[in-house]
Structure formats: C-alpha cells, structure tokens
Length: 156
Image 1 (cartoon, rainbow, N blue to C red):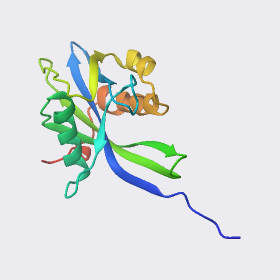
Image 2: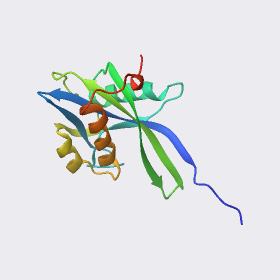
Image 3: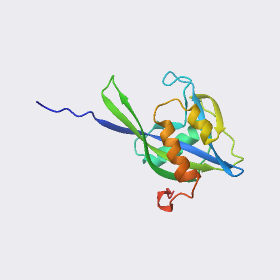
Image 4: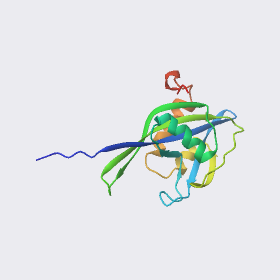
C-alpha cells in the first residue's frame, strides 16, 4: 500500500487589526462581498504575490482592503487553515496582528460591503468561519490582554 499525503499550500496571509478604545481593544471585522465567502464576516485575508514576504503581503492586503496604513505589525504564530475537498489540499495562512490609532478611518475596497469595530466577545459571536474564533481568542490573550512579545514584532 502506498500512502498519499494531502499537500499543504501556504499562499496567503490573514491580518487582524486592533484599535484601543478606552481601556479595551476593538477588532475590525469585514463582511465579504465576493462570490467566494459571500456575506461572511471575517478579518483581512489575501494572497502572497510573487516576490513578497508574507508580512509584506499582510501590509499590502490591509491597505488594499481597508485603506489603512499599518505601522505596527506582529506575527502571531497562528494560522488559518481550510481543507479544499475539490482540489484535495490544505490551505494555510499566517495570521498577523496590526495595531491602529483610534481615529483611523476605514475605506473598504470592492471585496467587502460592510465593516465594524467590535469587542472580542462580539467578534467571537460574529465570525463565520470555523477556526476564526480560536484565532481571535489567542490574539485577545497574547496581544490585547498583555503587551506582545517584542521578538514577534515585524521590523519594517
């Protein structure tokens, strides 16, 4: 018998933006407006383009999808993953965390039709994809409830 592996494809990134409002952090959630994931509430995500590092793709996707220029970016050591039964592979995406100023304005691109800054509790109840809640719980613990470890910061 020959064992066959399901391939892993890491061709994308995800990014969670945090904004301090008073004593707490809010999370930016976006509502998808594309054929893939139509009306799904999620955080930022997209593909890594040729020649880009994953963190560079995260910064580009943040700016493209929200109009936000993020100057404080961290790697989370977390990954989004989903299995594609049609193509028989597992897609994984490194999750990055960006901190933004309270006054930061959001300007959505064509991929989304709505957004909201929400508490972590509301984010847990709103995200649509399995696994997103667990990612957000870890981000709350390590990036909102305590100062993130300095070695996780991306030096741009």
